[in-house]
Length: 136
Image 1 (cartoon, rainbow, N blue to C red):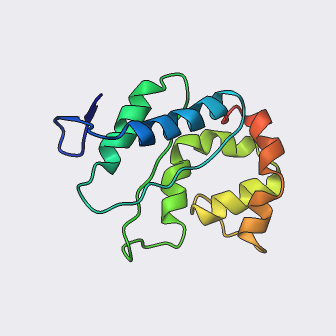
Image 2: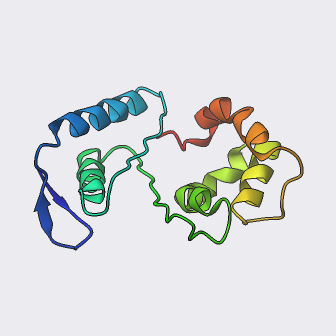
């Protein structure tokens, strides 16, 4: 399988069948309504971006959002979350108010939310997913 890597050119994925299979199974579960998250770790240049680019092209009917972290380089504690959620921002208004406020505060789209950010987010995001259309 070929993929676009970070360098802008085409690169061939070598010995990535196991990883591609695992990610395709996650994508199949997403199509069936079971969300999941994937963290890809590895040294610089081992093909993480190329692997994810290949999958993103392969799953045309599923929304794929992704972000990258830079150790110690983020100005905000939730900068990665904000980058990850930016393409889904239009759906925030469909969330229950405590979750919408917590997410907007964490992503610096609105005022900070009082209380426990992750408690508010986790409480009810599952049921909210069905009503937002963001699960597709």
